[in-house]
Image 1 (cartoon, one colour):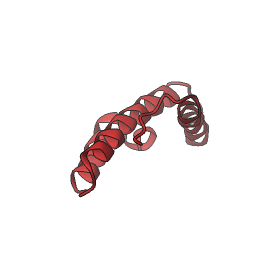
Image 2 (cartoon, one colour):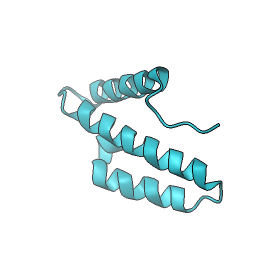
Image 3 (cartoon, helix red, strand yellow):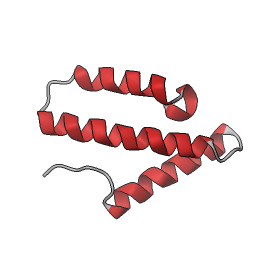
Image 4 (cartoon, one colour):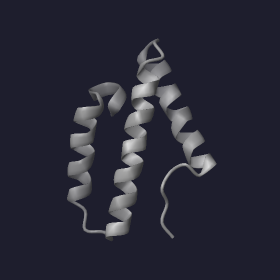
Length: 76
């Protein structure tokens, strides 16, 4: 979303989505933290230039790297 809408609009949409959920608070906290990471990755991907496909690929790589390295918040 950040690549397409910018980080502020992406945050608004994602936060509203999380507020609408009825899951455990720990899950909501995890989602909010990981959404913040995703917005940062999107901003970094946008700064690399190129077309949207390039930006999406960079953002995806950053997300995968964070997941694989344990940098994202998890529960359980």
